[in-house]
Image (cartoon, rainbow over all chains, first blue to last red; front, top):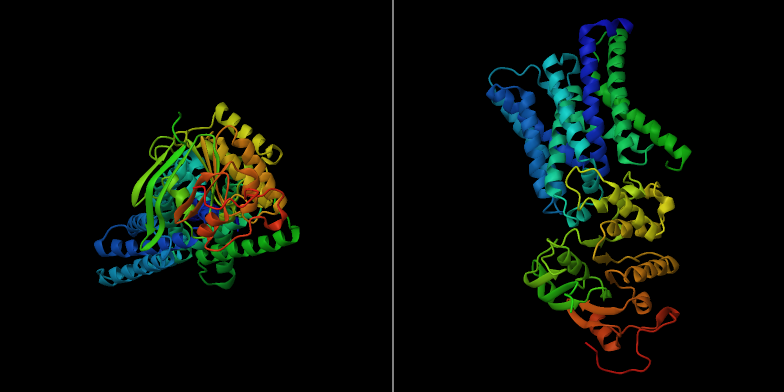
Length: 276
Length: 257
């Protein structure tokens, strides 16, 4: 194991995973507290449309994902605040349409898309330094946005109507939150892929929630758990690949670790009863 | 004479084809303690949302504290129905009450000494200072109701609007909420939406009966005729053995409104 840590590529991957955990834990906590997981699922799958567009038009698919993700987030967000019924259907539609567009765009793209599965299922091992810098940039945006507007975001997550009534710009804050969510999802797309991103966004946050009583500690815990899952998944991937002489992708291992932690934590929570 | 705390002039509202309010006119004096009484679907919550500027009337005029409801934001304390809250939300009592201070704070502004003092006062008023650090998931129904009242008080409102503050609280706890509101009504206008006829009879100063139309303009006394018009069926006003009666001692007949 120690020899893996000495490999430059492994270090790069570890740094990428840890940086991604920062955005993941902070935004994931808001998503879980505000109960907009399915909305975030819609965003992450819509982002796949952007991946396809990138292939079709020959620009970086990750940029396309960010673009589609933010547009889908803002579109759902605008409707969310206006109609409360039928929101489920709308989210499913955006979810499916994004995937459908992505598949079509890829089919129309010239040549073969060799690393398409890396967008679907993650490709942490292939992440170049350029993306590590992008992940860091998203972290800065998330920390700035949430750091400066923590009380306001907490207020709209807790009680939108009250926030509106006291004069907060609820819609602007909500769309801002969804835009940051989209960027966090795209960051996670590099780690675990479009399909698994929502699991890594919500599971560590939900686990952290079980042991914390307010939002800021929940975020800190979620970041730590997310980092533990990402790091643990990488190590597992290395160990399993070495032992079984196959190439075990880290993405699914990261998500399975997050789910296992959540299950164990839920069981422990039941045993210890009272919430802190 | 001072201007009304709020004023509705021939207000009409419908959700699509379904009429909710029909020609409601109502003016409430500052420092009144008013209950708006009515059955489910009578338009009570719509009335609150019009006063908060969350809805606009199809016809008619709504004025709050002498201005448009949206412009009055930050001067009106709103206490929503407690039962609609997600008790799983990770937040402590004091954090909820601090939300009341965000109205006057610029976005991203740090709360200062004046804000902290207002939050402390609000917590003291509802007697929850000792529970300031408790997560809301660990509160009783009555305590949560007080937290929501404290949050509204933290913004130091001139008008306090409460939507069913005693819904699904037991008699004793509900009664303590009414008493708290009564003491608040000595320094600000308090408007309560409720169907708790018994409690209203003992505590509030004036009552308005609503069922799409206003069946009684604010007055202290309710007659069987008014209640029948409001609820569509006769209601026993002295049910549950409440010590005070809403009805005047003898049946005076015709409505006051």
